[in-house]
Picture 1 (tube, rainbow, N blue to C red):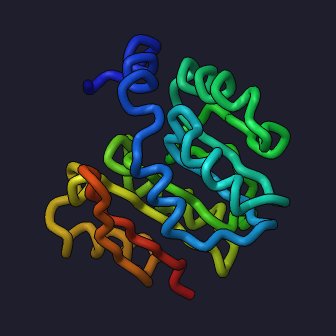
Picture 2 (picture 1 turned 45 degrees about the horizontal axis):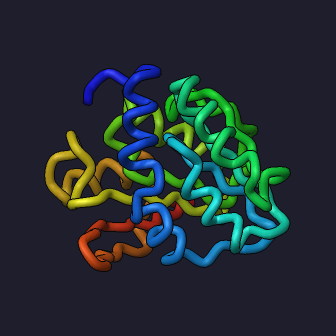
Length: 186
């Protein structure tokens, strides 16, 4: 599916809304209770709902460029115990509606390869991250589409001002994905 619209959002929510990489990816991270977590391309909000189990006193913000996807995320979160701490906003990776240096963690779970301009998106991630913040990219089945080789993907992250501090290949049942944790270079 190349065009994201209302129909695609509903298809995605039905087919991938509770995709296992969300739960497993969040479970592989240690999140402080007071964190501000931003999820770029949040889809149905599944990753944030899982993150709320660790982030018990912080704020969780889901960003998605598709208005219908934001509606679906709000609908699916409406009865969740952390509904008062999870906020959904329309926006893109290239223009995050988040204040400078306010986020502890920025997630891109299976969304990085959908960004319109990856370099601009990475600059936005740098802008919103606190100095000790982390950027986490998750991709099922290997590298994000359009990033070339692993060496080229890591070079893009480095050129955007990040250093990869951790790379994990995670497999459980029939799900396999890679998780990269990045920190801003000083």
